[in-house]
Amino acid sequence: MKSITRTKIYLPIAALMLTASLANSAAAQTSCGGLAPGCFKGIFQGLDAHDVLPPGATSVVIRTNATGTGTHLGAFSLRREVTGSLVNFSDAGSAQWIAANRDIIYTTVVGQAELSDLPGGFLKVTEIHTITGGTGRFTGAQGSFTVELYHKLDASGVTGGVETHDIFGSFHGTITLPGAAH
Image (cartoon, rainbow, N blue to C red):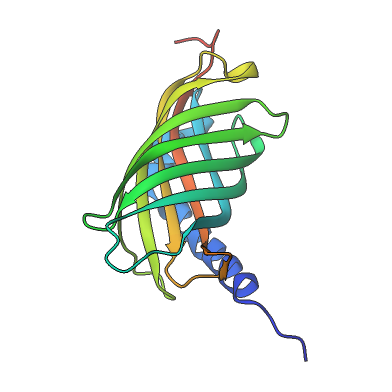
């Protein structure tokens, strides 16, 4: 009998719960009703990584690598680095949203975490991403969007002093591309 890894079980279940919650989410429905011009939304999953924390640590640098699909991006990669406070559960940092053709959206990140009521032990991190620039078709882009990220509390692995955690999430908001009608 084959052994099934936790990642292969948790992520599909988490994605199913996320899909159900998005279907009923008022914020997701109103921010992009009918895929209005400027609508920016999508879903992703991947890993958060951070150094193993010493006793008494008050902050943590988290590096995210994820993939997903979204409006204006199609298939994309997400690279995010934030510094999180272990005292008040806030975070701040930056992210890169990399489209399949390698065009990039750059954002600054400010967020807050809280314990989620999802089964299995997750932090729910709500962040505001403000677009600060881009490359290719995103050069001169503007806008902001909300990211809801679920971070599995149990580590999915520890290698070489780095701990990884499964994540999944969604985003919704607006983007104005250069030359778009305002």
